[in-house]
Image: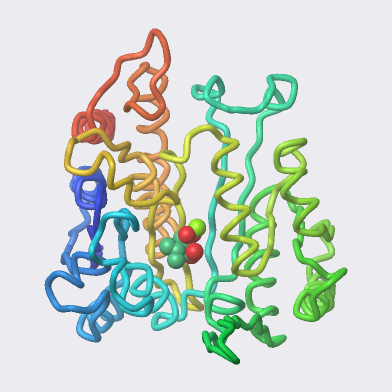
Length: 362
Ligand code: IPM
Ligand code: MG
């Protein structure tokens, strides 16, 4: 099979971690007789430096023409990087929001899983973490507050800023369907998270989710208010299977969920539209403080590549092989700095990539 993949190395540690994911993809492609056609494009700060904008139309067209996009990370340190002296819609993050919207990537899947080998890194008390947890946040990604109208005005010398949170029922329905579908492949439970005690958009969200649930009688649905959910994530994360939520709540809760795993450097994500096309990226950011030093953890990006094989190419066996190689390397005690613990062997970003690639087909 030919796999046409556009790669966005991006900024900060992005180029280093994407290189390792490519290494692993090459290995698995060789093993199973696939041909990889990889093309690097610029986005975020790297694109600002080259073209003056965080995402060009040409890059969007190239991404659209591919089967999938593999991304590293974008953005820099807002306190020191010149990118943050530009207008907000010219900054690196604007490129990410624009590519999500342009490719209609409305469904963002963020699994958060406690690796048994890394249980010691979990910041929760042992009596909570010992149950283990394995959840998936299904975040709506192209609507809500991040895409609503916004403006800043000055009235009578007083500055005033407005952001708007809008959802229509079709946007809610399509993400709810994705949530229920994925729950069917997991433990058949959906927790829909909203703020229906205050927001109209949340009340509509709840109604539409209840309607969709009727088509999934085999899936248990519960509703939870977002503030309670933030608390439950640290009190009893084992209760969650699929968390279905709107854009901003999902942004915040997915950072919290990844933190409770103790290993944000391990968590992959997929952003999907209604076709098999997807953009795959680690859940973590560009870590400018360690960029270019071969210290980053490439595992989240490598696991994002595995998600890509699974969701965009239907190559489950190949995806399993990568995930198994990651588990094996962890089992053997290899760790990058972020997940290092006593008695383990600390390795660089590129060495971690080599080790995982070596375990494929071994
Ligand atoms: C994320 C990031 C982005 C978001 C930022 C960089 C715009 O935080 O992917 O979670 O909020 O979606
Ligand atoms: Mg975020």
